[in-house]
Amino acid sequence: MSIVVVGSVAFDTIASPSGSVKDILGGAATYFSLAASYFTQVRMVAVVGEDFGVEQEKVFEKRGIDTRGIERAKGKTFRWGGSYTDNLNEAKTNFTDLNVFQTFQPRIPSEYNDTEFLFLANIQPTLQADVRRKMNGVRLTGCDTMNYWIQGTRAELGETLKLVDVLLINDTETKMLANETNLPRAAHKVLAMGPKALVIKHGEYGATIFFREGAFGIGHHPFRAPALPIEEVKDPTGAGDSFAGGFMGYLASQNELSREVLKRSLFYGGVMGSFAVERFGTERLQSLTRDEIDARFQVFRELTHLE
Amino acid sequence: MSIVVVGSVAFDTIASPSGSVKDILGGAATYFSLAASYFTQVRMVAVVGEDFGVEQEKVFEKRGIDTRGIERAKGKTFRWGGSYTDNLNEAKTNFTDLNVFQTFQPRIPSEYNDTEFLFLANIQPTLQADVRRKMNGVRLTGCDTMNYWIQGTRAELGETLKLVDVLLINDTETKMLANETNLPRAAHKVLAMGPKALVIKHGEYGATIFFREGAFGIGHHPFRAPALPIEEVKDPTGAGDSFAGGFMGYLASQNELSREVLKRSLFYGGVMGSFAVERFGTERLQSLTRDEIDARFQVFRELTHLE
Image (spheres, one colour):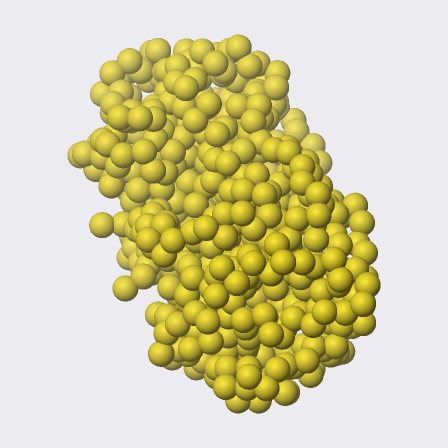
């Protein structure tokens, strides 16, 4: 099994109460790929500039990630700068230099054509839809988006949502998309827009998955995976993308697409998100073992498990 | 088994997106008592004014709650007015008329002396400590507090915390009390102040219990109970007190004070909090059945349960 991810690769400059770093490897597709690589074969579609070198390339190579879909364009790689103060849940963006990402036109290598799973990270909705249409043979498509697209390109996003199976967004984005302040009611409105399942990421409180009636089996109850209370949160950047990587990666490693598998995927999403925040950038995601991942899965499971 | 609760009885005037009500029965001790009454014998210590009549008295009577500790003072009952806008997690206080509550000196009837459990609802910390000292024979004491006491009477609160077994507060209060923004680290600091366990209420995301090393059995992991995503939140008033009532009430109904019992108590806390918000005031808490409560307990359990 394998998964294609389309999204950003970036150099991040980050300050948090635990320190600061400059121009470290980041971007949604990067966090997603590293997290998913512990479960399945990952194939990237992205664009980088001339400043993207061997050092960065090696990070993906070591995790066996296929980078043939990473286009090298003239100019500089996308750069983002952000800082976190005491409220680690919210980043203050200091600068966004789109650079080569501004004119990104995803091109899918023919070698990726047999891929069964697809994840559309947070890019312009029409680009997401184009990729989805090109990858017509996939079994399941996951999708992310953000307030910028919800407010600025609602019609285009609406078209994209008709083409995806699982949408992964946070509480605020769900309420904004549905124009509804009650979360479960907002969830049902979003499901009516197209996705068969909606994963709402609650940050440090975990995530909830809502199912469209009849999708992935029977039952109408949502399901929640808790997040582990983490003592050492160094850098929250990429937590949501790592969550998506764990969720989609585990899903892509399973034969069956049942509710029980989606539930376990939700736990693995939380596990990978919790690892990501323990170190700056992708450091923790580069050197995990499957044993460490499964040990934390057990801790998460026991966190809410009654005898 | 039985439990004494010391706290406020009030008349509330509430506005929320679902409507508004005037002078309905409320107060921390009221919500707590009604919620706990489904699990154990509840004995109240509170003060009301001359406007507290047969109608209010009957609410407690119907649930078999012992009101011999409710003092009737000259003047009016405590009144609170609050409103909720779209963010149902936060009340805007419109007015607070303490009335007879201003000079409240809790008096414990001698008939309450054999009580095994005690809950100190949110009142001035020195009054909480006095009650705790008078009820010297209890097996376990639960305690609530709020930002007003944390900021204004920190030294007095510190003395109270040495005398209680379980403190139940929310995320913001925990961070404020510990002067620490990371929640697990804040939790450990609060446990060092005295309580054997700390229950942090996360509102719509559930609650987490942290244990002091060696308290209530072995192990160092916290435990979390999720909350059910509720489609119809009419009035969040009293959710935290109802949570405390479910938690302490279930605990008081069990012989053993083990971690497993505390975990189930945490789930029952979430269950009672979720019922409370479905109707204005105490309406839903007045007419539940134990079957309805246990059915929701199962739903909560399945909400995070992997096969």
